[in-house]
Image 1 (tube, rainbow, N blue to C red):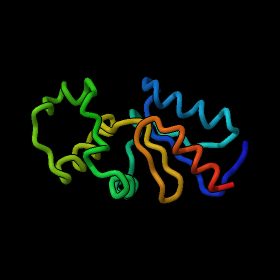
Image 2 (spheres, one colour):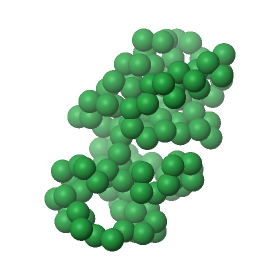
Image 3 (cartoon, rainbow, N blue to C red):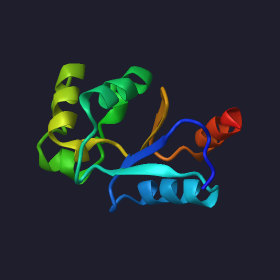
Image 4 (spheres, rainbow, N blue to C red):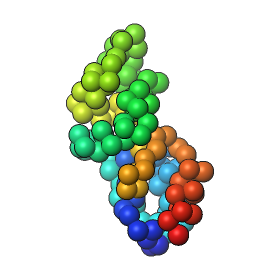
Amino acid sequence: MKQTGSAWQVFGTRKCSDTRKAQRFFKERGIAIHEVDLAERGMSPGELKSVAARSGWVALIDRGSERFVAKGLSHALLGDKDIERLLLEDPRLIKTPVVRLGKQSSIGYQPELWKSWIDSAS
């Protein structure tokens, strides 16, 4: 596997098609990734805050998920602290995949962004 310096992390779930596409994206390029299944283990508070610092708390919560709706959150007015608490309590509310490389992070399937990270790391 090709290494690009820092460790790549992909947070997602086995059921998420975008997470599987992200994993395939890196595998096809020979890049080793550390996979974290959010159904088994959530992000640490530090990891979560690091991603939120880049993208914002609102971007991290998957408002379109069945889980979000099932929890009755569709009409809730959620502030940053509410979202942080919810995501730490139930990591499956995180929009996936979350990809981290050092201090960089992305939410959702973003192959063009990842390509730019790979190019700048080479």
